[in-house]
Every structure is written in C-alpha cells, then in structure tokens.
Image (cartoon, rainbow, N blue to C red):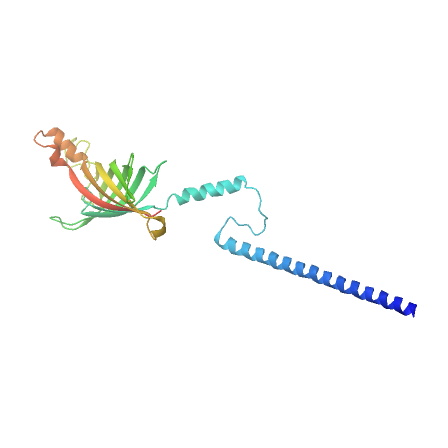
Length: 253
C-alpha cells in the first residue's frame, strides 16, 4: 500500500515536470517566431526605405558615416541648391511689358537673390513681338517685422542684364558705321540698375499649402543708355530716364 502511494506520487511529479518543460518549449518557440517576424519586418522596411532613400544599403548594417557618405551628401546638397525657391511676375522695368520667372535666395539671412525671367515685348511699331531674357541680382540689406505676419523691407537694390531675342540687335558695332560711332554701346544687351521697396506677407505654418510667403514690390530703374544720354545732354533730367515697375514674388520654401 505504501509502495503504491509512493509510485503514484512519483508519477504525478514526472507529469507536472513534463508539462512545465513543454510550456517552456512553447514559450521559446513563440519568442523565436516573434523574433523571426520582427526580423522579417525589419528586412521589409529596409527594402521599402531603399526604394525612396538611396542612403539605405540593404547589404550593410547601420555604420558610422564615412568620407564617401559625406561626399555624396555634399554633391546632393549642391544639386538641391539649383532648385528654384521663388516665382516672380513683374510688370515693366525695361524688360518687356510683363515678365515671368524663377529665383533663388542665398546668404546668411537670405539677403541675396538671383532671378531669371522671360519677358514679352509687343510689336508696337515694329514688325513682330519679341521675347526678352533678364538675369537679375537683388540685395535686401534688412527687414522689419510688423504686426499681422507682415515683413517690411525698406530697401532693395541691384542690377540686371537684359537682352532681346531678335537678330535686329547687335552686340558689336556693325562695319557700316564709322569707328567709335557708337562707343561702348551695344543694342543687344542693356545694363539696368534699380532701387525699390517690398512688403511680405508670411503664411502661418498651419495654413501653408503651396507657398511660404508672398511679396509685393515696386522698383525704380534706369539703364546704361539713358544714363549716358543724361550725362551728354544737360536738358535730360533724372525724371526723364527712370521708370517704375511693380511685381509679385512667391516664396515656395
């Protein structure tokens, strides 16, 4: 009787230990399976990232940045700087009745701008309408923030080169004119200088969709031919050689 009870107790202990071992094995298998899922998820995410981010290398684990990485980032940064950050629409200004173009800003405070514009010049008394190209450099030394999200820029200045896409204009004096008949003067390219002012409306972050800000500006400008005429002819005054232009600039990002 005593032996039977002892055998029964030993059997129960063996059964309990077997069940515990089985549960432990199941837990280990579950952890291994979860690890496999996580590993598969990481691999899938790496593949997805590689499709949209060239910095992800599927054959390498995360590592310290090398000289190669820095060179790639530097090259991409230079290419990114070629993306225009502005659009400009301008009326008048010795570059056509109206002009449209793109621009770039740079400098520590974005105080320098370069614009490239295409202008339209109606035929007026000529045989046909014409297209102009303008390369413009702007300098805005400072700005003043005012209430309501506005930025006042009391002074903008700069110069620009303008040319007309037409064969009737020349960059060198034709041979049919005597020497120095038109000294230092080309009908192909005009050099312009300007002064102006701006008012910028900054779009709040939570309301931005396509643009960061919009700027309204005016400029008073003149060109090299007009300046030369005023110098040579005392009857010509400053008011005779300056012109007014207005425009709108949008800052994309």
